[in-house]
Length: 457
Ligand code: ARG
Image (cartoon, rainbow, N blue to C red; front, side, top):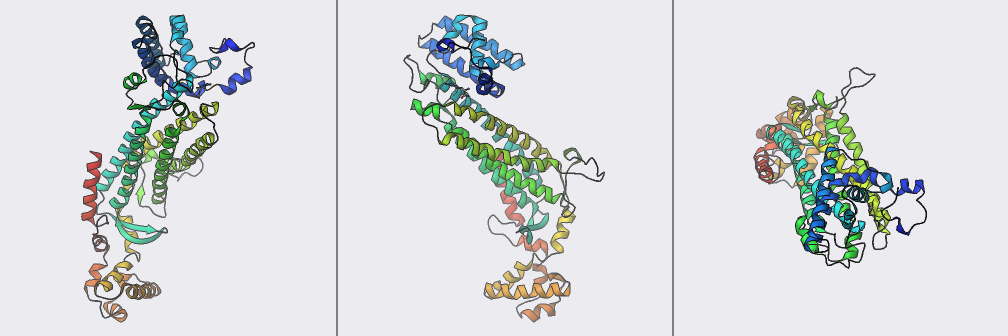
C-alpha cells in the first residue's frame, strides 16, 4: 500500500522493515488522544486562515466519525500505515477525500506524537491518583477498626515494640500520599504543549500555538521547538513515580504474604482473592500479593529502559524515541490492575486480633519500657539498658517472660523497681505510653486518622 511519505521513494519498503519499524500494534492505545490533538490543531488552522473554515469543519467532522468508530472498536489498523498518526490520517483521507490531507499542515508527527503522549500521561496520571485514593481509603477504614489492635512492631524482622495495627496500616497511607503528590507535581510538566514545534524547528505557517494549548487545556507551551519534540522527561518522571509506587505496593504485599502465613496468622485473606494449588488440596495462596510483588521488576525495567534509550540521543527527534511507549503503557496497566485489586483485598481481609495479641504477650518487646522506667527514675539510660538486657537474659534462662518475673526478681536488678512496673509492662500500656507526636499511642493514632481523613475527604 502507498505510504503517506512515499513521494521520495522509488521502491516499496521491504516487508520486514515495515514490521520492524511499525508501532501501530501498541500505539493504537493513543487513538483518542491523537484525534483530540488533531481536532484542536485543525480548529486553530481554520481560525488562523491556514485552511478555510469550511475545510476545517469537514476535517473535524471526519475526525469525529473516526473517533466514534474507535470508541466502538470498529476500526482496523494497518501495519502499512506504520503508526497511529498515519493510520488515522489515512482513514480521514479515505473518508473525506484529498481535503483530509490538509490536516497535517504546519505540524509533524514529531510534535504530534509528543502531544499525544502528554495527553495520555495527563489522563493516566489523574487515574492513578484516583486509584491510589481508593487504596488509601481502604487502609483508613481498616485503621479505624484497629486503633486498639496490638501487634509486635518489627525491626530486622525481630519483634521490637508493640504497636497499634492502625498505626502500621497508616504508614502505608502516608507513602501513598507522597506518591500522589509526586504524580500531582508531575502534572505541571505534563501540562505543557509541544504541538507547533513542527519536526524540530517550528513551522512557516502563521499558527497560533497558544490557541491550541487553550483548546487542549494545557497551561503553557514549550518555549523551544527542539526541546518540545525531544523531551520525554515527563514519561521518565511517570515511570519513576510508578516505580516508587510499586516499591510501596510491593512492601505492603510482602507483609500481607507474611501475615497470612501459618507462621504469623495475623490476617486471613478473603477466599475470593486467593488461589489454590493443583496438587496440594489444603493450599490457599496469596497469589495476588505475590504477583504484585513480582511485577515490580518489570516497572523498574521500563524506567531503566527509557533512561537508557534517551541518554545518548542527539537532538532532536530520533526513531529510538518510539521506544517510550510500550514501557509506560505496560506500567500503567500493571499499576491499574494492582491498585484495583488492593483496595478490595484490604477491605475484605480478616484481622486476627487474638493472634496479634498473643504474639505481643509471648515476647520481650516490652523490654524498652523497663529501661525507660529506670531512666525516668533518674538512672542514665545506658545503664538502664544494660540492666534490662541482663534481666531479659535472666528471664530467657528461666523460661519466663518479663511480666512473669517476681517483684523480688526485679528488686535484685535494681531497688528503683516498684509494683507499678507490672502495669507499665502490659502491652496496652506499653503502646499507650508512646504518646510523642506521630507515635503509636491510641490518642496519637486517632489524631493521625483525623489528619488522614482531612487529606482524603
Ligand atoms: N511512531 C513515531 C513515534 O512513536 C511517531 C513519530 C515518527 N516521526 C518520524 N519522523 N518518523 O515516535
